[in-house]
Amino acid sequence: MVSRITIILFQVFLSLNLHPAKAQAWIKAGYWNSGSGLPVSDINSTLYTHLICAFADLNSSSYHLSIPSSNDRFFSAFTNTVKQKNPSITTLLSIGGGLAKYSTLSAMAGNSTYRKSFIDDSIKTARHYGFQGLDFSWVSANTSDNMDNMGTLFEEWRAAIAMETRNSSLSELILTATVQYSPRLDSGSFPIDSIRRNLNWIHVLAFDYYMPTWANFTAASAALITG
Ligand SMILES: *[C@@H]1O[C@H](CO)[C@@H](O)[C@H](O)[C@H]1NC(C)=O
Ligand SMILES: *[C@@H]1O[C@H](CO)[C@@H](O)[C@H](O)[C@H]1NC(C)=O
Ligand SMILES: *[C@@H]1O[C@H](CO)[C@@H](O)[C@H](O)[C@H]1NC(C)=O
Ligand SMILES: *[C@@H]1O[C@H](CO)[C@@H](O)[C@H](O)[C@H]1NC(C)=O
Ligand SMILES: *[C@@H]1O[C@H](CO)[C@@H](O)[C@H](O)[C@H]1NC(C)=O
Ligand SMILES: *[C@@H]1O[C@H](CO)[C@@H](O)[C@H](O)[C@H]1NC(C)=O
Image (tube, rainbow, N blue to C red; front, top):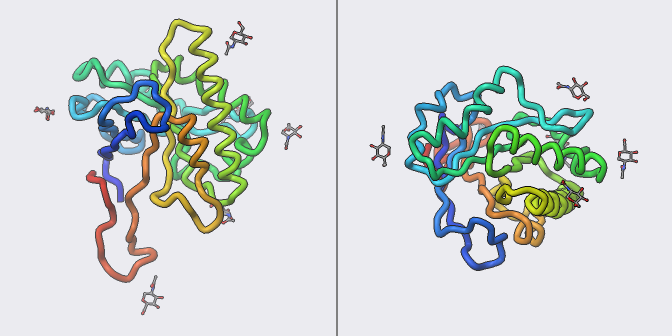
């Protein structure tokens, strides 16, 4: 169970291979989920360096981002609201999440035309809502094709972000992803090289280790995480 706001501490691997933009010693990132019912203004944003607004979905025919109209006003106000308590906080928009449709994400990642629609629209949407970065949360990726396509997506996404930065006076968008706790799944493994080259950091899912639905005993449901 993930509670209303998830606090995740990450160490950025300074001066190693990750994309160097905006590198800093520690990232203290939290996700705010629009389904949580927690007012954004209640977040004590002084506790974080980065806050992630979740989730934008994908339109299954245009592969553009889709933000339900009921969330629009929260997403539009998110950055300004959390900056009131902590003006130096950085905000990201997360795309996908546990409820996003596998078939849509899989189709998008597997087709260069759809990837381009998705990437271009994600950058536009981030700017439109005032986010300083994007987070890709494809938690259902489960084949080696999915993983390879994700690697290609990150490559193209970073190139588009860099291009947008060159063409504008804005600072480069951060790009992160949510990944499982293991680099290897039953089939395929995460595109580690592409992740290193193209993402600023990753968010490792470290909860739901034990759930009543698949374990007959009690144990810590999470590692590395409080909530
Ligand atoms: C927010 O967090 C800061 C830093 O820990 C703390 O000093 C402050 O009291 C907190 N504010 C509220 C309203 O909880
Ligand atoms: C998805 O995009 C199509 C084509 O742009 C549009 O007609 C449709 O209304 C969108 N669906 C949703 C749920 O936004
Ligand atoms: C990608 O989608 C387009 C439009 O539907 C289609 O024409 C093209 O063949 C697809 N490409 C691949 C590699 O599936
Ligand atoms: C991958 O996940 C999707 C959605 O949960 C499921 O429909 C599909 O069967 C899975 N594929 C494999 C190879 O496990
Ligand atoms: C950036 O500018 C180049 C050349 O000036 C242009 O070809 C390209 O389409 C522009 N890209 C974006 C994302 O605006
Ligand atoms: C839990 O225990 C029951 C009864 O021994 C057993 O039938 C079931 O398969 C177990 N479930 C799991 C997920 O181990």
